[in-house]
Image (cartoon, rainbow, N blue to C red; front, side):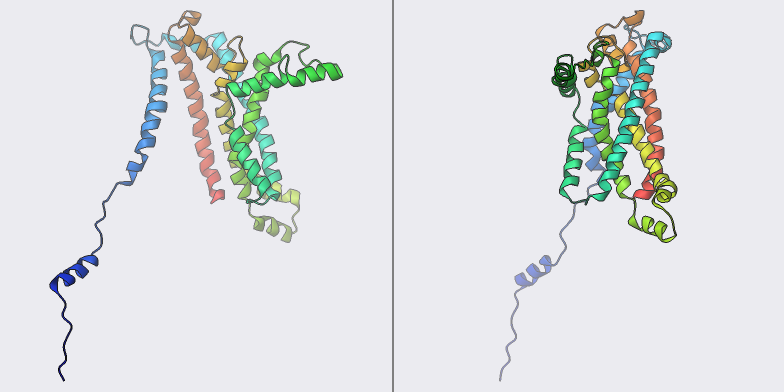
Length: 306
């Protein structure tokens, strides 16, 4: 009996050998993925900030000078900075407290539940609801002829503007600022609140502790860094807000962003040129201090969110 071995052609052998070779991979540096974001930050954040700040050190003819910095000691400018800091601090504290209470109330809700999803979605939208739209909403609601104002006056005889139209002045900015500060606090503080582990509360009860003792000795110390970091973020958010104040406070320049607008309209405000750049420098210094403190506190808070 003759045994015939199967024949394999050389072409088939080469084809199967090449199929087993790994495909060549093109190595692309990982940092190239950050190029679009880096270009955006450079063109729309870093470069405009640098130009705005440097303009405060030059005159209109391009001569370097430090005389513009004297504007920061002017009583009008100091009052504007004090108003901005006071407004930002007040709305940040109120927004942080109310937002933290809202986060505490949501601890009993399922993370994938409908109510929790609605609150998270609404917070994301309302935190960005500002500018002319927010100013118009408050004017239409509690303005001099707003819906609520007229209803209170006609129904109960209550005139909320008996002492003047405060909504168009500095006090009128408090409510709109709190309106977007509270949802921002919910967004930033809820992850820290959700990081509280049920095992900590169970261990506290097992050892004979009370609910108040848990919050006093465990909950508050753990959440304090995250709360402080969120508070600083809310302060920075209010301090740098411009559009809502510009649309609502039509008279005067009570806060620094409105002073910058006035300086851009008239570069000879208070007899000094390039005042806008000097004011921008003051705002950048304050914002840098706040964000530096935020980064330090956030690094400590991140240990409990792992």
